[in-house]
Amino acid sequence: MPDSETRTAMRERHLQAHEDALADIVIEPWIGGTSVSGSEPIPTRDPVIDEPITAVPVCDDELVNQAVQVAWDGFETWSDRTPTDRSQRLSEWVDVLEEHLDELALLECLDTGKPLSEARGEVEGALRTLEYYAAVARTQQGSQIPAQGDLHMYTRMEPYGVVGQITPWNFPAWAAAWKFGPALAAGNCSVLKPSAYTPLTTVRMAQLSDGIFPDGVINVVTGGGSTTGATLTEHEDVRKLSFTGSGSVGQEVMQTAAARIAPVTLELGGKSPLLVFPDADMQTAVDAAAAGVYYSTGEICDALSRAIVHEDVHDEFVDRLVARAESYTLGDPLDDETTLGPLTNEDQFETVSDYVTIGRNEGATLATGGTAPDDRALADGHYVEPAVFTDVEPDMRIAREEIFGPVQTVQSFETYDEAIALANDTEFGLAGGVATESTDIAHQAAADIDAGVVYINAYGPIRPEGPYGGFKESGIGHDLGRAAVEQYQQPKTVYVNLDSPEI
Image 1 (cartoon, rainbow, N blue to C red):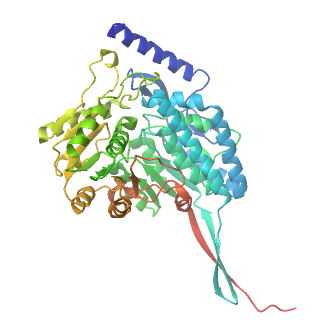
Image 2 (image 1 turned 90 degrees about the vertical axis):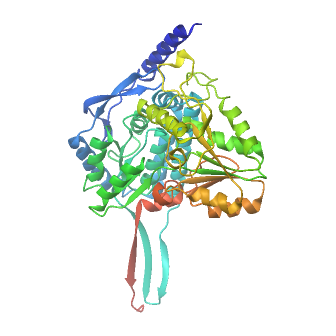
Image 3 (image 1 turned 135 degrees about the vertical axis):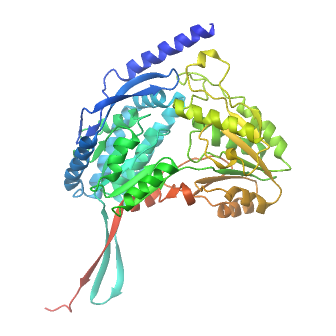
């Protein structure tokens, strides 16, 4: 079939998928247990054909205020529920979401451009996260503190009340679960703002909570970060903020919260290293390097985007990595054979394209990729072929700045100390990777890398049981694990003074 016909067929297929996905639902803000109408709808666009999927209303100041108020109303009921009841409600929600898995996966695929199999896997990851917090909700405890004979001293963990949460556009369903799960398990009510680029699954997940939680426990406000998001973060009745996104916006959120002494959790950017030692299994190392920067088209906060490779295996590693990069199939995410979709929005396509130009101008060698594919059938989408840069120096921008796209840089090292120095020569500290067959090197490097998450001989997996957060400018606090629940609660110490018993 000629490219023009394939391009037309792809467009018609996606427009039909839009219609099918939205046939029985309306995407609107979810406030107080019901959908509400906003103002000035803005389109969320399909990155494959660059066409609107639907227009989503914007929540103005009045609607954000309404969401916060009904969340506090809901808190009066939710805070009285036992941990067991909160667990049961979360489990019921997971059951309903499971019944709508195909629907949610399609929405995620259309909104983000991820291959349908990846979108489905990420929605399943969201469900497993909520499932985990349903279990954790039952196991929460205070503690009794031994003090003295006439004093009974104990702690109790109390929720903040209403928490404000902001999620990014790269993993909308999964990120929503990371926020909702621990907040609700801890006894809070949530007002969550998804990215204006990819709000569909988050809104639909909230709609599917209808009748399960008391009204006001889950609220989703839609709109842009500088409008809806700013109103939410500045709201004086929001007691805790959790934000995932860029470092620059994270700083603004932190400054805003500081004005009213509200605690924050920030999961920000990264420029994560993968250290490949000379004893590494080369196929394993290349698998980690490829998955770490090409999965989700490289739009990953903890992408292993800096391969730091021992000089003895550098050339072999590069040859294998280039071959792997060139093996990806760019195409329609609705097709099973597609292994790499487009970037999620036009702005990110321009950013990645600019960084490829910057890298070449800095003197790095573009070994493969980095441009739009020749296939004219993909011309409407935000596609970039997986890139590999060699001859990369530590002071180059492509080695220091977060690109957030399918661009791998390769540097070399001679000694262990040099490898660790290169790995830690960054303002970020979200993740790191180690490829080695030596247990000694694996554990020592994991200790020496300044990052909140370290992967050994693989990229991932990310499990809900493990705290997830960064060092340095990659953030404060943690999503996931029991640590996340603790960060949505405040400990209260109670002193009960006792007299001698009398009969």
